[in-house]
Length: 147
Image 1 (cartoon, one colour):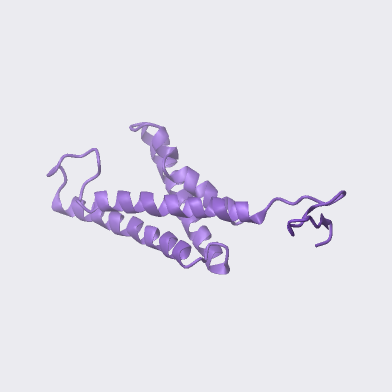
Image 2: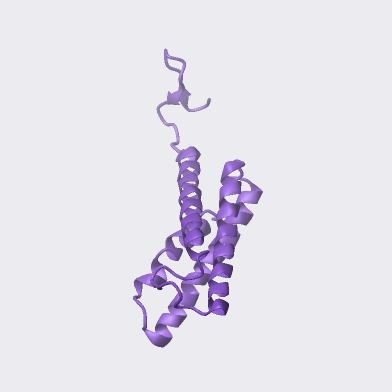
């Protein structure tokens, strides 16, 4: 191609004066890692919540109605895991479908950060790190993919 000097091995390499552009395959690899990490983490957390209690709680600590809401939370995050897993599995990360998925997952995770931040500012009854982990990294990664 233009700006590339042919080599004896048949591989085109940048020639003098070529404009170097970041390799878009690196971005694809980065988002594939984000999608894989997201799917794996959400599946693990969702399966844990299907018990009807959170990790720090003892069995029987919640009422049946309260356990129902924890299981509802589990179903919600398992559906988000399915979304990211299917988009990755079908090779749709860098398509219009992937962009829609990025928007949905960015809104969910950044919304969770805002929800935790509000609760923390009102009560200071849990560690501030809960505001960041695990939602902020995923929210930022999915939002940046939209740029």
